[in-house]
Image 1: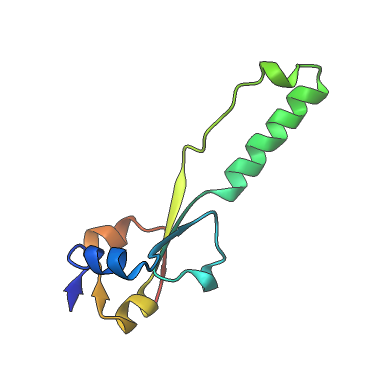
Image 2: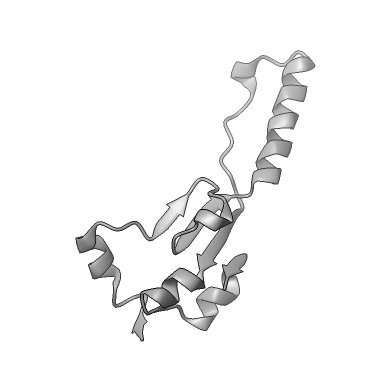
Length: 98
């Protein structure tokens, strides 16, 4: 089996996307997907709405960036194309589809 690191050139040359973002549903994760944690973003949005309703001007509210992300890895698809991931990488993934 080949390593994920040795095949990055193949992915680039074939113009295949191996990393997706923006919270794809897990059944659509091709190989890997990284996105911000949706429940946390919804809570932050509710905080901002609360501030606006309390009278703070929207221009006075700072823009926030997500601080926590989740990583999903689809081993089923990776195995189909004979791609392996290091165990340390899989241990850091939040969701592993087997």
